[in-house]
Length: 139
Image (tube, rainbow, N blue to C red; front, side, top):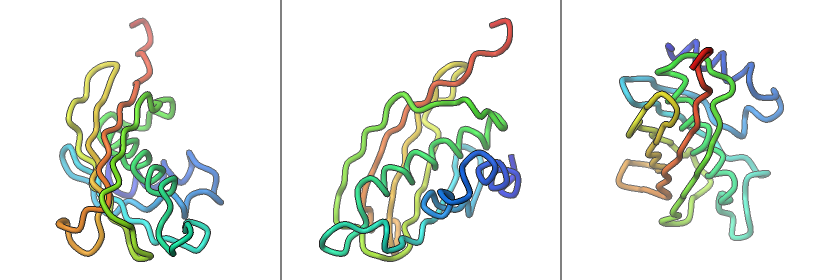
């Protein structure tokens, strides 16, 4: 899927009110999708940092997006595992999610997501996400 097709699918797959909290697709390449999120006040926790659930949501949607970019609009691909490590506080500024396919099989996909701010050296979190893909008809 192209950047435009992927963005349109995500816009149609999630409720309109939820989309701003899930980030926007800014790049699509072989085995890679880049998303960005501009955190709003509703995404913050005490200490004026971006909440863990917000970062987990961005990681999960980025994983979903990289799968869709490679297999097409498969609405029923679902998360079966999400492991995240928070490396430093996430400031209230743009968060970039780089999702890279580690493995894309017929039934399972594994994705590495790195969340950063400012530069790729400024990692705020790293996640590994597993997805189960729907079984093909007759398979």
